[in-house]
Length: 161
Image (cartoon, rainbow, N blue to C red):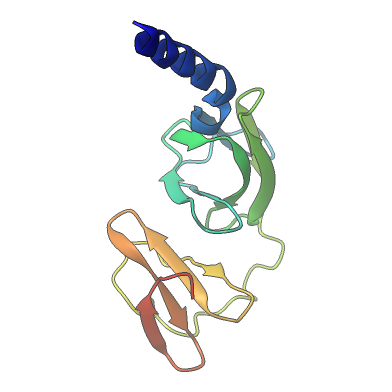
């Protein structure tokens, strides 16, 4: 019986002190242009600086997006849409409220060029995250993460380089 009391007390203490570690949250919002018109099919990327978390969603026909089961912590949220400025925000989860993100028109239209086609099939997406060493990190929900080295034109499995 004493062992049962100790087990119950341990579970209660665990429930009091650990819930924040295991909290799962929803990060949601709406992507709009400067006239407050919903932007469909914007790419929203949620990641932490260690790249332990790297998720991607697309905004729906109402400009809405949602990431489920996001652990508490600090993240970056990148929002991209052709013809619009790329916006990257720092966020802390849990969020106090749903986000509303405005994307201005692209300010440097025509200054970008494609230097190489995506080295691996990504199902219609060819955006990546530029790493400090010049390699590009790609992650897509249909394939395992990998990196691309533009100097050698080589790809490799992502293993935290």
